[in-house]
Amino acid sequence: MNYGHIIEKEQALSPEIDELVEKANRCDQDEDKVYQDKAGYEIPEDLKFKQNQLAKIKVAKQSLEQREEQLNPGKAIDEKKQISFADTDARIMGKKAVSIMPTMPN
Image 1: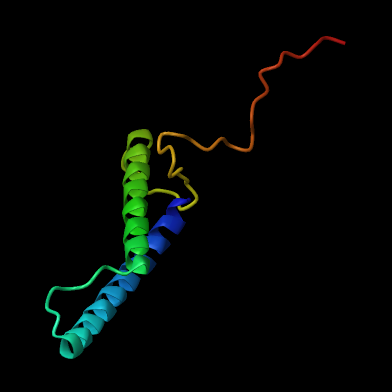
Image 2: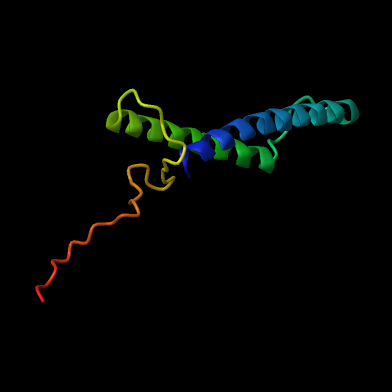
C-alpha cells in the first residue's frame, strides 16, 4: 500500500469506527431499555474488522515513516512510496532493473 493510500485509509477508518461505536452504544441503550440488561454487548464483527484494519495501517505507516526517515532524513515522504503489510522490511524494486547478466561480445 502506498503512503498516500495509507493516509487516506487511516483518515477514512477513524470516523467510520467512531460512527460504529456510537451506533453500538445507541443499540445497547435501546436493548437495555427493553431487556434491562446492563451487562453490555459484544462488539459487532464489522467494528472488530475495521479496528483491526486501522491498527495494521498504523503499524505499516509507522514502519514506512521510520524507514524513510532513515533513508532520507528530514525529507517529506512521497505519497507513492509503498510498504508491504506482510514484510515491512521489503522494498519495492524500481522499474529500471539492472541486468546482472554479462553481455557477450559479437
